[in-house]
Structures are given as C-alpha cells and as structure tokens.
Amino acid sequence: IDVHMNRLCSRVAAVSMPTPRNLCRVLLAWLALPRALLQACFPRQRDLDVVGTTVLHFASFRLRIWIAFLLAGTCAGCLLCALLMLFGWGAEGAAEGSGVVKREDRDRSEE
Image 1 (cartoon, rainbow, N blue to C red):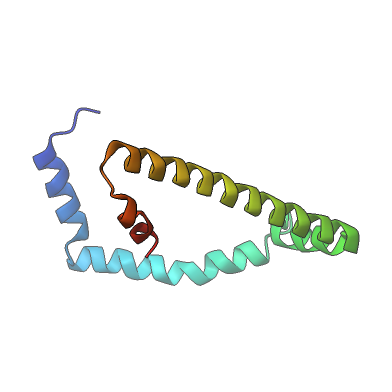
Image 2 (image 1 turned 45 degrees about the horizontal axis):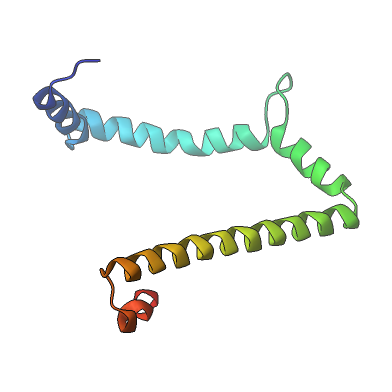
C-alpha cells in the first residue's frame, strides 16, 4: 500500500517501454481479442449464452413495453436536463450577485 513515487514511476516506465518482451505481450493480447469475442458470442456448452438470452429477452418484449422504455428514458432525460439547468441558473445568480460576473457578461458562459 505504501508506494514510493520513484518506484511507481519506474515501474510504469518499465511496463510501457517498447522492449521485445512488452511488444510480445501486446501482440499476444491483440491476438487473444478475437478468441475472447467469439467466446462471448458463442459460449461453451456448459456456460450461459449471455448475448443470446439478452437478444431473446429483448425480442420477447411487446411494443407497449418498448414505448414505455422510450417514454421513461425521455422523461428521465428531460428531468435531468431541467435539474441541471436549475442548478446552473442558481450558480449564475450567485456569481452575478457576488460580483464575480457582471450582469452584461452572464450570457457569455453559454457560448
């Protein structure tokens, strides 16, 4: 837990330096990527097919559920936008009231 900054930086430099050993590790990691993606899409017989079950569950939803999802997402986005605008107006008013921002310059923050 107690790490000296010089040791930390030297470790980061040793790992990120393009030595043949590090380049070999990077190459092996990139070569393993297609295998990992294929295993995610087509799992072994005893493993759960997460992607397949997700697609099947999404396909089983009725149109009214999809409409409810879209409506709920839109309402949540609008509520969050209104909340952030409310906090922004409060901060703008506080900055203007304290004299940090002039009244004629308050619209410049939106540019």
